[in-house]
View 1 (tube, rainbow, N blue to C red):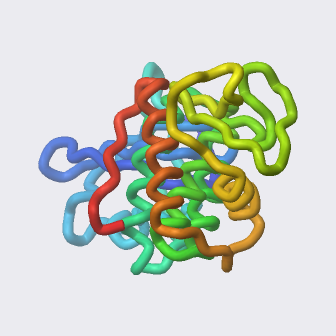
View 2: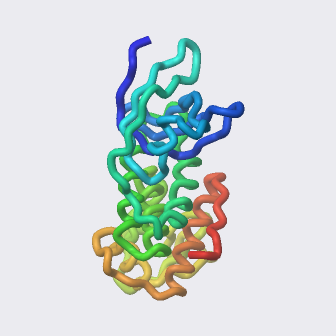
View 3: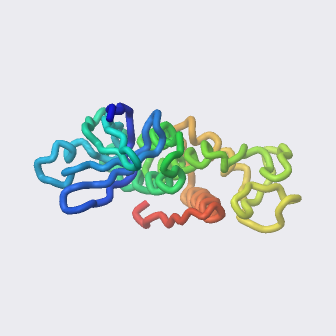
Length: 227
């Protein structure tokens, strides 16, 4: 079998037998794949030092005749997160692992960009911004100045409601979380302004909106208390 080369990000590793691992990765040109890393659990395995989350990896593998490929070489290229952001990065990675399924052609750039957004911010806001970025690129999030149901442009000071995973005007929803103009503006600006800060109560509301949206799409997420 011919060898394949690509850049990748490690999503998860699953022990297989006493010495090997099954790896789930997002790759730049081949989407989400699963590879067998034979002997990767051995103390002297050349894979042990390179198979790291939150790093861009140069991968080489052989495709399987009927299923999973086999990893033959891996090199760590760039670290995307400082160690003090790894716990927050785990939350982003958890969402990415559920968003992108084996065979999906995309996901690598989205996760890479989400981790970079986290790296530039404090842990909690960076985590929310990174997850928001993933959902936005998946087409689940619309413009914060329009109702996502009727598409009407709203006034700057208009109060909107977050109802069943959508940002709605009061004509389209009569119940839900109240989303005032200040939160909408802050969320919009957050992507391009790493130094922007939000009040804790606004971050909590933003997190509730994300959790509600994920639940509507069948994704379970309960962020840990350390953030």
